[in-house]
Amino acid sequence: MTSKIGINWHLRFREEIAQLKEELELTQMWLNKAERKLKKYENNNIRPTGHGENNNVVKLGRRIYPTGD
Image 1 (cartoon, rainbow, N blue to C red):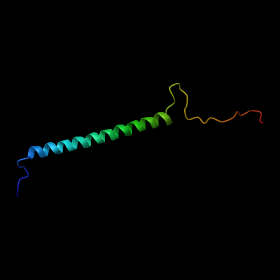
Image 2 (image 1 turned 90 degrees about the horizontal axis):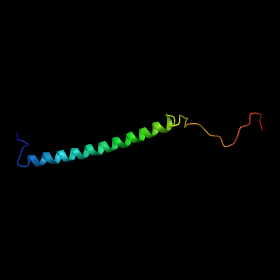
Image 3 (image 1 turned 120 degrees about the vertical axis):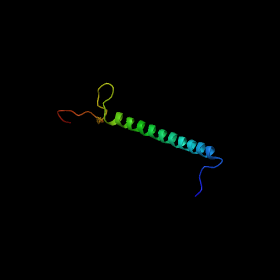
């Protein structure tokens, strides 16, 4: 059975750490993007606007007269 620790063990560990840091950075960027999309979705579809108005109201193209046309 041979040992995995050799002459360049420190270099191999530094390279592995650099690879893991890059993977962590990409994962954090993906997570931040997903959180921004979720926040945008929640703000546009669930919560009212800043003035307390409902932003999911369907606006009609013409007036509706109560007495009829």
